[in-house]
Image (cartoon, rainbow, N blue to C red; front, side, top):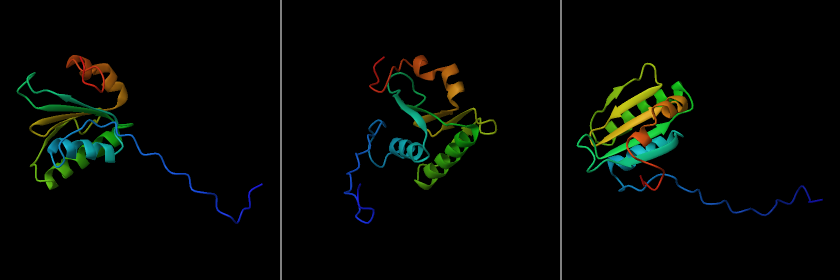
Length: 135
């Protein structure tokens, strides 16, 4: 039985594995991905849209566990974008917060509750099939 007074040797912590797609540091894309990660968004996906549409360069899709979390993530993201010097964003769907769309200019962000995200399946509609971006 180990001596309760003697501390056990520290076990080195494993490095966290980042599931976020790479983006240029200091960019709007990086700010959005970091904000969503900080707010514990689930299943963050970034779909490059360059060459597919002139609407935006990226579409970021993420889920929140509840309408409250989705609304909070949207509000935090809008504040961080403004304070980051990227201007104001347009937000749609905030009152219900089942699906919130944030238009940040070059990047469009969709925040969903998981059931709503599964129903609309935007990743499939845009030909995105997984983290590698392969269609």
